[in-house]
Length: 164
Image 1 (cartoon, one colour):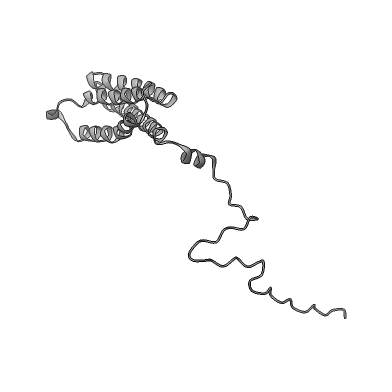
Image 2 (cartoon, one colour):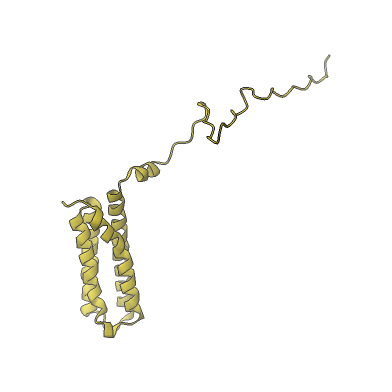
């Protein structure tokens, strides 16, 4: 008859093909073959496949780049605020910034133990600008602390990276 609705459908029986399979003894149920997990991002696959030495090289490059950026930012701040900006400390800072850029590039392009040691030497040379402990102030303590914290990935790279 026209205008009549069809009878309501009955739900599928329990345990049918549309219901998930029951779990057995605490093991998770396998996914049906029709449902696939989305592929992982390309960066995640690279990070999982990276060896500890590759991770140490990447982290040390990032730490040395951050160190160089902080040195350059401090140098600009020093030149903007100081009455007589050129002196021993500013010369050491400029030298450390230039060497930091070069060492970061070398460590990124060819991660070897020697390049990581060169990065540690650059950080050590940059500490000459803080002077003797009798002349230290709050900014000196900040410089020492940041340098020590950013040197940790480089020390790890020295331990893990192969010699050239």
